[in-house]
Image 1: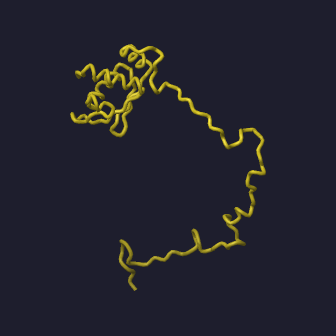
Image 2: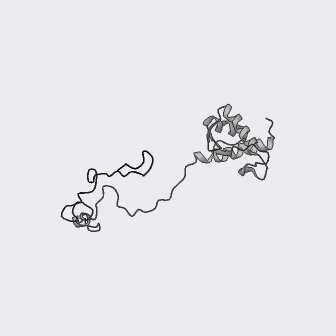
Image 3: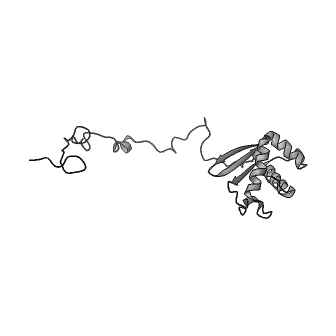
Length: 165
């Protein structure tokens, strides 16, 4: 499929910037891809451009629930870097390390001294209400298997009619 150079370059730039690309499986001519609304690049063009990259081994493709998902491989990063004329220190967002701010924890460190006075003491009486006991509520004998004899009355459901007397 013939793809305009500006569209192909926009697709390659977005793929390199994020490291991933998503496109809905909608090939109608009016289906514009969400990421390229200003360029009016359709989903069909995005799918075909990335299928070309997939056939060369530059991206891995996953398909689920009418959406294509593409992930850059290491070879794809090198190819796009040379195609877009980027220096080696620029990497896709999927390879960037995120720095998390350390938030002081309210929990004590593992292996540290524990403050037993701050913990709520466990009282056995708290849990006694949940346990079954013959003394507390008594056990009902007519509950469970074998507790009652089933009665069969005719006239309910399918089968023979009511029994004749």
